[in-house]
Image 1 (cartoon, rainbow, N blue to C red):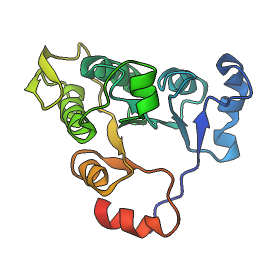
Image 2: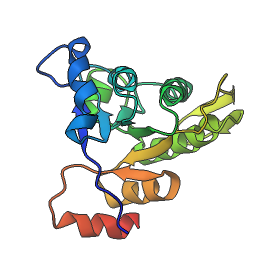
Image 3: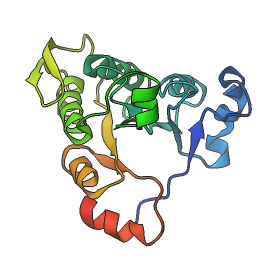
Image 4: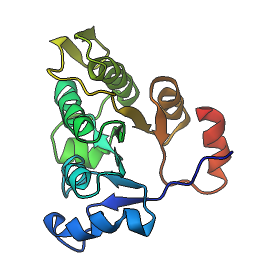
Length: 197
């Protein structure tokens, strides 16, 4: 039996203030929506809209698409994800990604270097940290010494990696639970699926 389709919406909607979207979010399940996703560019961060959605519509699956990995350290990202996962046990997907030179370098002053290696380091760290392990690692782009979440989420959130090119899609398929794609034409889907499996 094929899986049931999922219907998602990206929050916050830009037409009104985030705090004023409670009634809309609460109505989403009755409108047939199953998921609420958030992103971050220059509005809200990726987590705040989902914290509110977890309270306003407790049955929805929540996901970040995506939370940037250059603009926050690995331990902070694990703490943010653990907090949200504890509000929505089994319903949160942590989607991470590289972002763009404008967001990373122009706006935050961080060099956008070695994105594949950084994504790999973050996925390895997050998998261990969100499982409650004490993590010490020296990756290619980040080092962490002795970090352990005070209260690991049960269950840990699923991990997804934003990917546009084959190497990053392969990385997401190998180390994450899913791959987030964007800007695909219909003819691109079979090629992405062939890489992702």
